[in-house]
Length: 120
Image 1 (cartoon, rainbow, N blue to C red):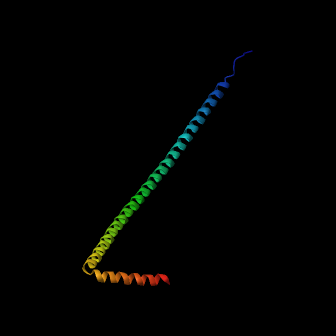
Image 2 (image 1 turned 180 degrees about the vertical axis):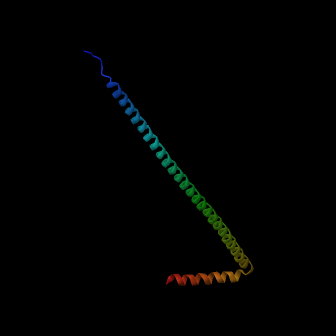
Image 3 (image 1 turned 90 degrees about the vertical axis):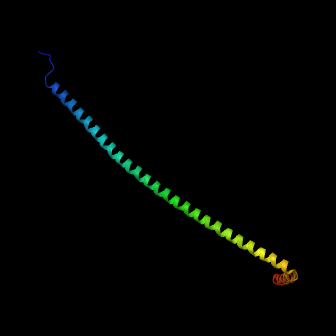
């Protein structure tokens, strides 16, 4: 009786090893493919986020420019109004200096008229 291991076992071991190697290779290919797909998706997401950030920054710049423009126009209007009020005040002072009696009479008349209007 021969106690030797039959020769058919070695090819089975080889087939097991070959199949295990094929499974490993398929798994590696699947993982690599998934990494590529995830990488491409991540790149697209990153590109989209950068584009959205650029658009937001551009809109913010436009809003800041518009606000600065409105502020500048407001300052100019304020200065113009202040200059006009100063001019009117100076004209009133000159009138009072030139015609003090008439100025007092106008002030008394305006006060009397205002008092009549406010009583009602």
